[in-house]
Length: 135
Image (cartoon, rainbow, N blue to C red; front, top):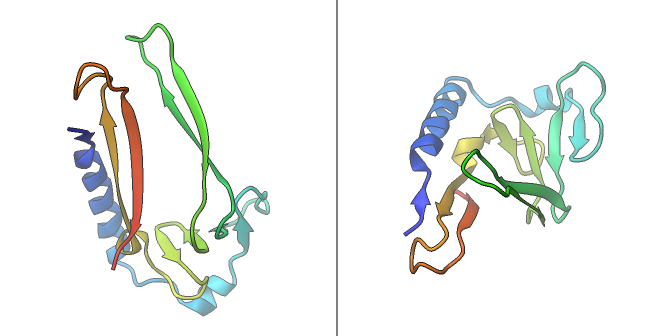
């Protein structure tokens, strides 16, 4: 069975949710003043910006395995894409750039790791991440 790194994820989620929950989400007028930067573009120097992951745009992800126990580290590059526009600003998220909410109220996920051979002594190890919209 995969070893799910829930303790760290829950702690991080609780911390972010607690902080974000203390403040109301930013309003559309307030956010309209902050420049939107598409993933991969350079933001203007020295200022806040909203990061946009456009729907369908390739988003590179690098997975790595290393450490003093290993004689050969590993690295894999892959691309993912969101199925809708996602705007991020600090701990806030929007799907239209106007209506903002705490990111932890909109998206949930989990990270899982299995060791090579853990299930049957021959299966490869796995690392997976899952991101789901919350209802």
